[in-house]
Image (cartoon, rainbow over all chains, first blue to last red; front, side):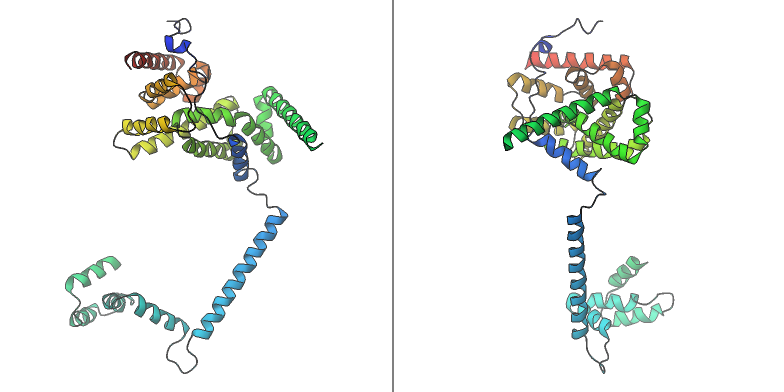
Length: 141
Length: 204
């Protein structure tokens, strides 16, 4: 069958005029966006380079301020807590409940080197249920 | 004065685009491969490809995906892939069929992902239909809307064949390369699509 001679009714109408539209400057914007992600992606202009340096300097200052604050806030000599322990203790007591603490007591240590039976007895005595102990054990192993 | 300079710049830009267009049309595939091999030429070649094909690829994808925003994403991905894979182009097919093939794959992949989130593929097509009816970037008349409704009832690949033949007026020979199908299968697909569209238009 010759497809060219079989021109149908809808093919005679003006349906080839594209009914879809795009925003006015779309194709120019599209080209710029694609170039930015391809050809120009590796190119860093001097002004952009300066901007990056300023951002890096800003980050460095931020890190320095955090470090100074950390040193000032940690307990001094004579305390039983060093800086990291202090922060860890603060996080533990402010963020988690007692049950979570119980998990920490058991599984902070390597189960291979510890006497698991003793720990389980300890947890049961502390009121932690069998199911909770089992869940913690399974999640860690 | 400034206006005159702008007009001159615009004329110069048009001239440059026409010249690079001619240049690319005249390039033999072997020359294109040679250009791809050199990083500086590759950048230039990609810019030319982008200038020449961005609109054609956009309309090809838009007719498949209907939604402008989705089309924008897929077209950008297509050209990023063209950029990434340009060094692998070996000249087995004409460069524009190679780009079409990437765009078609990207569009079909996008559709299959979208349809996976719907119960049936017709659900998604119904969403597209509703989108067309309220789309500010669609200003077709009643008949064009009916044609789009009929097209959305076709399977994706049949719709693609119809779009390439009817709107893009692509030759079956080129279409066979883009879709990796025989010319006979494509002709049969187009014929089926036309019959279905005619039936729909007669009954609605």
